[in-house]
Image 1 (tube, rainbow, N blue to C red):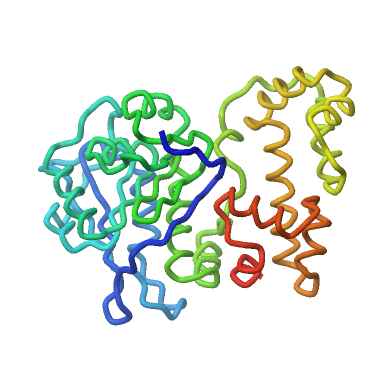
Image 2: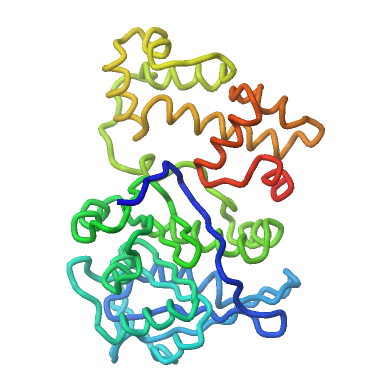
Length: 336
């Protein structure tokens, strides 16, 4: 099994697609019992003209993955003007949630995706759409994610995939997978950011009235029992850690501050956040460093590393890399 890196996102270099004269073609798949929200996210992002951006925006094609009639959730009927043949020239293919994780997709669709992948097209899945690529054999040896409800099934049925159940999306270069429904928008916005840079991505996010980049992973959305206290010991501890990132924290020191044993702390912290205490603390420190890099242009990297609690620029760079982020200096150039 490939090494599992704890991250919300991870990006690798991908082949360039499209030219200035001919923008990338995005093929959006449609099939019977289509998940309309996820399909709509892709249509909203790629099918609208965006002349205000002054860039060569994407072309799009709605492609029927199987013969009609095609119905969406709620009984909506869909007429797709293109067929699987369009996938032969698509630069990006978006696969919304597949209708049934237990159902093998039609073989013509799987063949078309294998051929598209072989010639370098980028493949993006939303939610259970990852099962389509898994059945096509295109996720072997890669990290991938899906909705937390399907993560265990994906890992069990396809053991050669390194399933990351915590990530909102996972970028493996040519293949990008995302978690449930709304995380598809996060993934597609990431694709825009990758292709056009943060200025364009921020402008599109503003038009969509959404954040250009969400922090955290799926764990924050997994149902858990509601706490009965107005302020749980874990919440109080988290507030204290956020206010004191420069201190040399350990599980033992956190447990002492929360007045519980180390074992109890780790169990209760994982139940509350989905993360181990030190993993959560690292992510908080990274979030602090990112905010300082974006907003304090006059502050050098050494000072930011100290304020965020990393102690040294080398430690900060290492933790940025482990979370799939650019090096701090490069991050500042991209997002400041």
